Length: 198
Image (cartoon, rainbow, N blue to C red):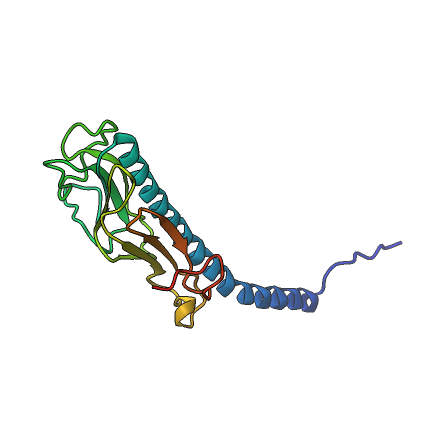
């Protein structure tokens, strides 16, 4: 007696492939947006943590400490309002880090250019940074010598929600009192995640 083997017909297999392709095509754009939002949040969080570290170092050292945006961590580095890397150094004579970002970190801050901490620019160029100034200085009380804002956006896919896109672009604000806030310009005033109205 012959037994009949049950399997999928070619038509059934093709229907499954078409349905899977349609589901995948619908999921890819939202996954891409999620991935870009995640990258923006990671770079923003790293900047925010660096600013907090610079403020804490100024208070702990009872002296001025500078947080600077830089183009790279090589001997060709320069201060940059669009730099995705940063350097924290003690404010003293000979503290200019331009062209010296490759100098080893000196946790005690005793050797020029007195670099206490640094972070390399993100190799993923899909996140853009735009600052209102190249540096911010915190004094021994943790106060800032100026107000500064950092904008974090995507450089290659979609636009920010505030411009009609799908991305959650973020902002970090540093006030003259030294207080820092990470916010999302997408949210209206009154929302806990909203940026303060200038």
